[in-house]
Image (cartoon, rainbow, N blue to C red; front, side, top):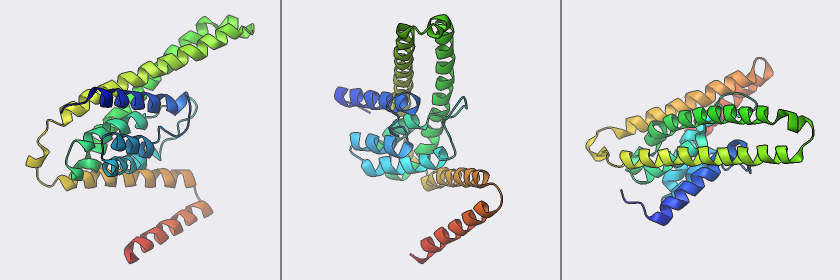
Length: 225
């Protein structure tokens, strides 16, 4: 696999932007898998594959609520890596690579977020007295350093994704049979994940009954098409 310098710079830049969008700035939903992967697909000239990867990972990400101190995977950077891998592999492998590349990368990204929070907490502790005294410069330093750390984290995870993708492209996928089974397993896992999250969030009573009605109507529409 040969990567043009401009494409590599765009890849690293997009991955970094996707990473900081999750919790820092601009929080414009660029980190949603369907957005991150689709743009990556455009970058590599295969938007359909990017959209396929994004839709697969979105199923897993819908069960994640990135708020507060909760630990959660970083599906945005993971989607960038998975879409890049899928763009350089047989089209039938797109959902499979969403699982094989995207899910481990999402876990790695989540771990890096946890480390980032620890570093930010240490930075706040060092400036606690200045912040309590209303020192505007201390607050600016916290904001600036936090953004820089998140950008460095996002760039590092994206770079790891580049290495993973380069390795993935050397696998002779065409020699394997029944690749569609891997893709089917990835999609099935996502459907189970999103259904599990829906059941937990609806609770009991009327909301759960409406969930059943919605699922029934959706299945009916799919069957009659």
